[in-house]
Amino acid sequence: MTTEIFFASNKIEVNDKQIQLMLNRFSLGKLLSLEGPTRGVMGQTIFVSTTNGDFVLKGNPIYDGQFLEEKFFVENINKRTNIPVPLPYRVDMSEDIFGWSYSVMPRFTGVHINNPYIQVNLTQKEKIDIAKLLGKTMAKLHSWRTLHYGEYEPINQTVRSFEGSYQKWLYKRIRYWLEDAKKYSLINFEDVKWVEWILDSSQKAFARKSLASFVMGDFKPDNFLLEKGVKGWSFKALFDFTTAYFGDPIADLPRMVLWYLSLEEKLLAKNFIFSYLECSNDQESFTERLKVHLLQQLVLDWGCAWATDNVTWNKKLSFSNWAKGYTDYIENLKVN
Image 1 (cartoon, rainbow, N blue to C red):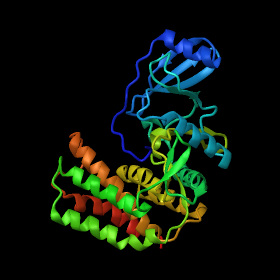
Image 2: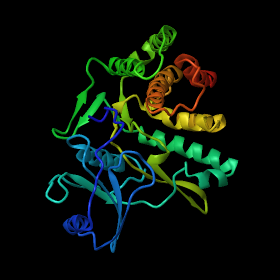
Image 3: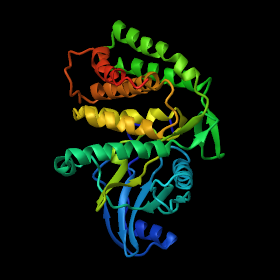
């Protein structure tokens, strides 16, 4: 279920009595206050402050076993890397308190990189240092390798392989969302022809891949925290593994690359990418693979923006003319 794309979730509504029952179950102290998060659109989380500390409640799962799956990823990342993740990640599958299962985890301190105040006050050197830090952190995340491309099935605790092959699954996914975008925008013959050209020219790159890696699927500013210390900025926490799976690791790069490019920060995007490459052992056919993964994110962003009337670019641009600006940027980096 992790590779399914969710544009909304089951919102959670709770009262103080329910929260205290949950806290009692895990011996987490007396409730002091509740607070909704200021970031994220899924609406599954609530911040809980108690006499024992600060916690995050995540509830009302969007698919069976969501929190068991996140627990699996959190615990394995902790075992395999030094990336800070929310542990202990407690899961209660019973529904007697809220009417749905839930998880509760420690709440980290730190700041989001997309915080407007942070963005305004960072020096150029700090921005570059952070971009490099994020690249190195992502490379650590991808050190978790496996022979199987697929999704973790939390109920039976196995990895279900993608139907056919990873490449077939990925290409089918891109074509599906391109077709879906036709419901909300004009996708012409030239757009489809250009997409197929990108896919065709990258087939050999994916055919040569053997090992799969952990892929978070949603590595973006809202899902990690940073902290500034006497030695500079450090990576404080990584969370939200709802869309994680095992595939081509560089599928995680587009969210951050596109975020930097949306700010017209081409130098930062470049530093992020090259820092990742310096720490990664998976550089073969990097440009071809990244262009496909970038294309997938661009198709999703295009369709979502038109569907929600949130188009921020020139509406006269065709999809291929709009997307080509981003894929050309990757091509011009001349990584390989």
